[in-house]
Image (cartoon, rainbow, N blue to C red; front, side, top):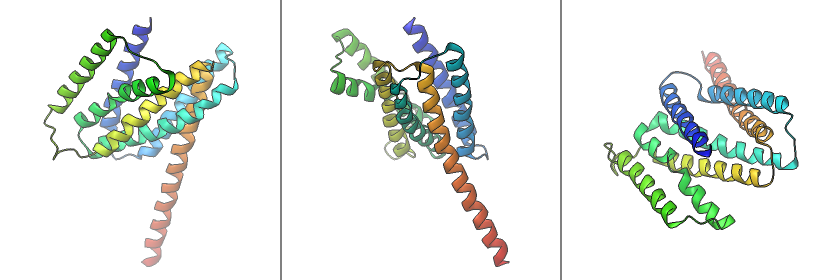
Length: 208
């Protein structure tokens, strides 16, 4: 069952990346769009939490930290798709498991068996070979800094997701807090930039 859920998650994350890359080339407000994404996630998970009568324990508060990391990673990924190559960003968005594996070993002492480690190395090596062979070079790494941020903070989001489950936090309430936190942050950035744009437009009109 876990494999089916993991495969479904991978497919959804892949589709999200395609949609992010497509919308990054369109003349729309990135922060407003991502605010809409997180607002939708908040309402959907809240409805599920209420329908299932999930418990709201103190551990659910970790969702706020997950929301902060998710906000940073999604903003960085969207920026990377806008300024860099999709193949480069796709490589970095496939590397968060490396961050999670390292953190799991350092914090929880989780170790991979020899066969698990071998499979992990083969999968990650194949991912790097496929992505890196797609006309990328050291002179063609636009957006790499955004890719590194994406990898790091997606990994941290996954790590704290696991930590929340270890503390007994219910899934949907935790996701409500996570999406709400990310939505508030994107809304704040959007309102701030909108205010700056209106102020600049007023200054232009006054100058005329």
